[in-house]
Amino acid sequence: MATHVAIAILYQKDKFLMQLRDNIPNILYPGHWAFFGGHIEPGETPEDAVQREILEEIGYTLPPTFSKFGCYPDERVVRHVFHAPLTVELNQLVLNEGWDMGLLTLQDILLGASYSAVSADVRPIGPVHQQILLDFMERDDKLFHDSRVHLTND
Image 1: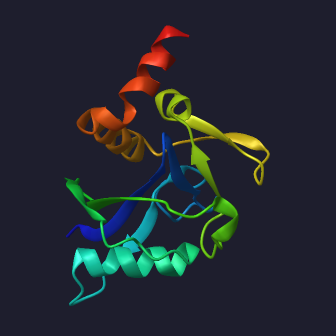
Image 2: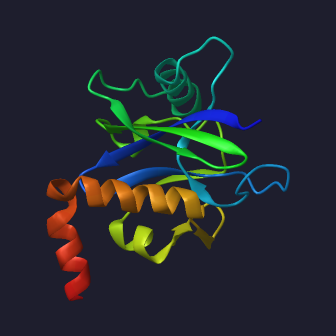
């Protein structure tokens, strides 16, 4: 039976907040960039779970405008994906879970990797998380169109 998780696309303009997962072998995507979020507890709704997880992991209260983007099931995990603007600066967040966090650019997303100062290395983005971001940018074209055009003209 697949595990249900609630994860959040948190964005500031054309950058996306992501967590560099711990580099330990018994978790999905060790040492990869991924969304903040986590397991849905028994009796908990995905909406409640994503709010709880984001508060626990980075001390951020999702704005009331957060909403569901979609659901991404596979054989191991059902990902309930939400999105919301990140309305505070990175230095106002407290990383309580994970190896690092960062605001990844559209270029990072397209390349599928980003540098982490904590790991002192370029780390890959989890493939499912990269695809979710590409889908999000495609669906929310009005937010990201200008930046994508700029990237393709470089």
